[in-house]
Length: 624
Image 1 (cartoon, one colour):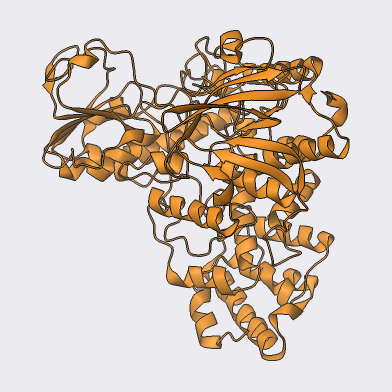
Image 2 (cartoon, helix red, strand yellow):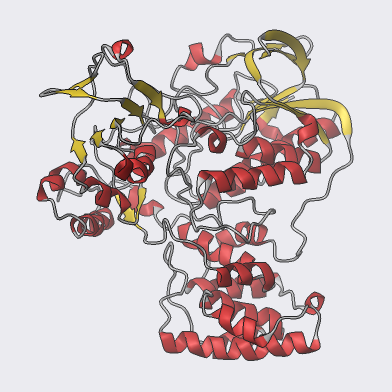
């Protein structure tokens, strides 16, 4: 491998220097070199330089330039040193400026995957005696297909849409992008070194999943425009009778195992508004954005101020004649200047060409967001200072976020409208690079702090005015609490949705005592709101599911069902943990909660807890 010293020197200016320092162990084969380098301070989420001084960075750069150039002058890339697990742990601790807890080392070693440069999993030997139906070809469905194929498990995918991608196919509204750093929001085994932005937009995300879909040859097992409508389990045959619709034709078939990859955020939620059917203009949910232009020069209403509206409003504001936002409650925002920032070419070069740089960079993004926040999300029973915070640390964050917002506000009439009156992190946190508040200051933009309860043929009737609109956009979220909707699932005891409604019972959010031979990814209680990425969680889940199915195959079992006792124990712990957390705080109302205010969508667990549980399938917890 030929790397010119000039190219390397230029690229290093864009590097994360804690990562570069750790790479020197690979290039020198000497772990003690870390003792001779400036040590980063404790890492925090989104900060990739370890708070090193400019002099410290230049010291690391000078040594790195010398050692890396010397290595490539005398060696091939295959000669690079692969540290022991003990040395890798020391490197982890160096990069993040603290001792990495022993609890996290196995999880981080797995994700780091530093022992092999070929991250693509091998294909397994086919085991044709059993077939899995995967419902959905979004992020988790594609992942499930890859991992089942890896173990030789036969599968097919039914996808209701005309194309793959799930949420990244459907949510094509202006400004749609991920809010987890992309170099972590990607499959651990399928890196992308060419992300154009740190938080990529929808077209680029969809393209990534299409490339994975094609690379692993999933097309041959996928049936698009096929909607599963009903499933009934036959306890005698130990098979599912599955009804699906394709081209308006209904089809019934029997399937061994069903794996739901429909997710939580796929069924649009439109508020129950009086007179909604009377409106004569353009009206749609944010996930159903039309191809035709309904924005430019129009009077537009955006109903909602959550994650979708937060992205839509800055993207369309300057094109509208008038833009009015109807806000039920304001969001808390996390300051992040990189939210719309491009990845420079030198950084892409480092990720692509400098061995192991991309793996350690991913680790630096991952670890500071791994449970660091969780302790601050528990209510301190003795906290009496304020009703809009739950403990000392949470209150300090409230002050930080409030100050960041106030610094952006010149129109003082906005202050009471945009500063939340509930504790930070009670609802989904949004990434703030200034675009939202900048849009609210535009002369053609109005923020109304009220819910929409009534519409007319011309627009929206508020408590004080009758507003006329050409276009109404509902950025009002999804039916997150209606799991598997609208599929009717009967595991033998009756309809799952009829029995549990919006209070589902599960084990790990993956298996259900009322539904045999059935698994879920991104199921109940598995949404992440404090750490990690949903892809990390999905990889945990498919590892567990694959192990369970493989156990069935190896023992020639025809059915699997989690024991009710195991499910209840887990569900009780899940509910008990949430009782003292911010998401179930009396001052908070969000899509994390069901109709009774109980959290049903979001995980209260440390990432490492969930990783350990899903990394160790225990057959004793199941009936076969």
